[in-house]
Length: 335
Ligand SMILES: *Cc1c(COP(=O)(O)O)cnc(C)c1O
Image (tube, rainbow, N blue to C red):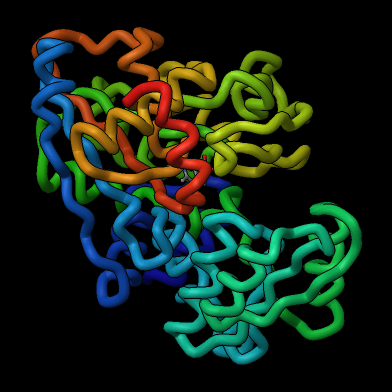
């Protein structure tokens, strides 16, 4: 029955609430439910209730564990025996490495020659094999697809994949468990896997629940694509929200449509606001996060988004892979 549903959903390019419940069952024994924390000060200042969903507490330090685990669980026995690969050196790469290790599956992470040593060490420490190839991300990606042909590895994409999206959607099931009358969810928006999954669950449950997507001011591929009505590529610029960089893929199959359908409001947030958000989490909640995870609080502090009074709002605190010196530097003006 489950197999049939899965095949159907692939044909229709439609991911359903059932797929998200299946993902919850798949990851249940490997991934802990994360806490939903009330933020008294943010709530006071907005005359509403604001809660923080601590997705930085996963073992890989970001929510990407959910999607990576679900995608790898769903592989056939043959695919599992051959192994998986990806070219992300960020939170998705870490998640794939860790999920594969836990499931006893070989993982190869393709990186370019210029990837910093700290990242290489981190990937190695998670038990993955490295393929160092070429001068940039594009070369690493190309190597990844060569490995598919040469060694039969399966690529686990970072966002545009039904099982990855369904995995990220399990965040929303947990939010509804803890806060059934939630009115609005705010989260970082990059490739759109996170908000496609969350949006699907929230809108299927109650179409009045608002979903707000936040991206950095420069190089926001999804924001520009939504504006144009089709996937566009943008130039990347340095940002503290580095986990939100990257394109959405010219041939985007799932997330562009889902974000169009489920995200009520995409918003751009400037760099200083991201810093304010990081400083706020540090000062008020004793939490150290990366820029991408602080963008929701930054947007509220900066009045980029208006929280409706007397409503219940959840901000996704998405990850904490941040260099401590970079963090200290970013927040010092706002302490
Ligand atoms: C990947 C990521 C995001 C954005 O998720 P998408 O599915 O690409 O939109 C936000 N925050 C962190 C920390 C991430 O790693």
